[in-house]
Image (tube, rainbow, N blue to C red):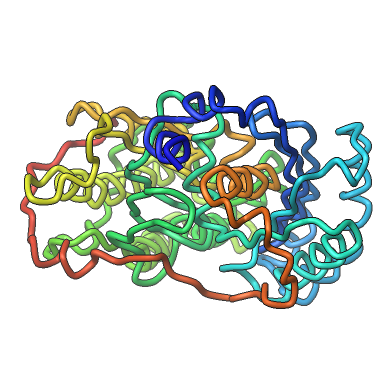
Length: 409
């Protein structure tokens, strides 16, 4: 137990000296929470043995959004072959696996069901422990796989994706504390809807890109990045919650006004779309920075000290962490507080099987009962799921007034 506590606070290396490394284990991770079928194998040193990812993005882009029944059909059609390719790439036999980890919550219920049923089938056939994984927890802990010495518990994490936006303090798997979350849209969702309304998909280079990626690229073409400015959401509320519906609606109005002024045809794009995208990125960055800044200050309150004895650390994860402009601003914010900042490699920011397998590794290393979980029928899906603890009310009660750090651009 002493070794496990060291792991929780100070990285993976401390437990390796206690025998865990000599007993190398392999965890299979299965991810089907939305529209990506991800299967991967990670060992207890954090080495990725194999990683297979089947994306449905091209299919769903044609219809302007994810269609849950079709997503489920595509998962069913691909999951077996993805597993076989993963095992072949790993050059392992199934009985060499130590455990199977699978996303059970939160996500699209129809998609989650495919992964959980497949995981149950495998676990029963191979007689391996089955480890349930919280999808957003897996995003939060992913950076530890790549930075084991630098990221110890506890740390602050900004989770920003197409379906979520949350600020949490991570103390270990199953031990996350919520500080704030979005009240409406997620940033990735807002990017997708705004990108579609802007009709960026009409441009050949953006035809198969998601909204966030297209907006980030288009922003680099701006000749006047300050041409568009949007009101800051929740400016009067001293908490850590987010809101992107206002930015989205103001974006729609700005696009419509420009289209009218230019008489843009129905199959056209406004002439200064680069300026618009730069202004949008700046607004989203400001909002993320402001709420995260308050979270940092809350963690540093003398009577809270949520960073404990570890160096203050901020991790950004989720699909939006792929955005270099946004992450640069989050990194800039963290530096003002002497706070180290990290994000996973870009290939691991979006949904993937590696993060699920790694969460399974963390469960095995920190919970000695995890290796004995054979009650397969007790593991089921949850479309929505919270965290172990919430400090949302305490954050609001603290009513921290911040001197805002400004974005880089």
